[in-house]
Length: 390
Ligand code: PLP
View 1 (cartoon, rainbow, N blue to C red):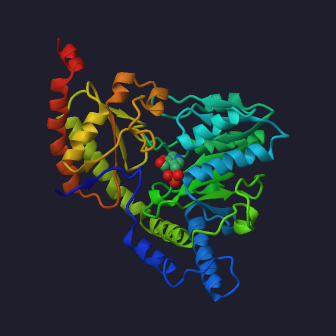
View 2: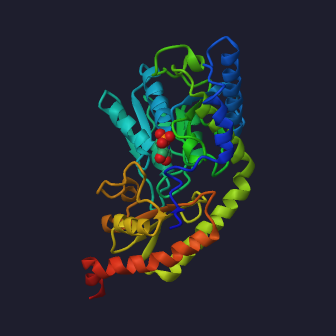
View 3: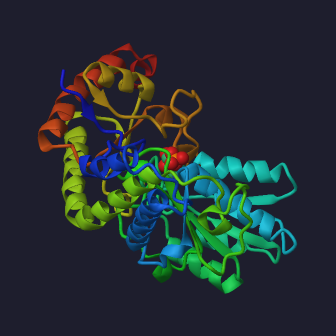
């Protein structure tokens, strides 16, 4: 059975060109980038070359402002805990949104249990953060605003420029989790006014376990990995040279192909949306109709369980997800959809299709064909659907 992968917001396949660039660093170029001999120097050159490529995709910014990490989760932890510690004498209040990834939410929760105060900004029905609420929430003891660039579940693109303007005006640092935005929409850190930006390689056809945090020189940060003098004393630990090289190549390719490729993916996504709308009743699009990542389609199929839809799709070789990969399997309705005011029963029926580079029109047409009988079968078994018909 041919398998169709529509879960690119969870992770992406490694691009063959990325893999090709990485392979020598598992083999003959195995040096430690901190060593002085030729093995070390080659590894160091590769790391710095990758740093330049990553910095290009988010600006360009100065490569020295990029710190490599183990991924988006570490970057979020580093940004939030780093500022919390460095600025604790100024204040212990932070602002974030209700729809952040758990890498941000649980870090904030940890800090809240340790003497910090966190304000969670609500979102509207499309998942857009309430800018007025951000403005109102800033206090003299606020040290950080952390609002994601684009949401992983529904794809809504947040008004980060407006958030940054508030942060600038109030003299507060601004962090954004751009893990889902990277490679899908243009990011210009300086133009937007971002102090700290989290990114991850495996969402853009790079390897898992590699990411980065952009740190504006003005941002006061305490490192939270202690050890050697790696990454200019900001993140100790021997660099993951192969992973970093892969991240650099993935960023270079994303820069080259982003515009054209995302136009193609957006057309496929809208084909899927139109096919679903045409063939299945009682569906609801979650997320902003326009301000949305080009690859993301989050749909609630009313009167069914999203998990059941996923299992049935999986039997047909089609991979999608409900909520984020990190929360799938939990019976709680998604915190993102709840914050958007989606009824729990409707939220339970949500499925996220996230498209990517390998998807074709033929694949989308297979999904459009397979989905209606699955929804019909599940609705025929659903007591909720029976009640609705009466
Ligand atoms: N932030 C967002 C918005 C994400 O979607 C993810 C991954 O799903 C992460 C952070 C975590 O990134 P990583 O898997 O690299 O730790």
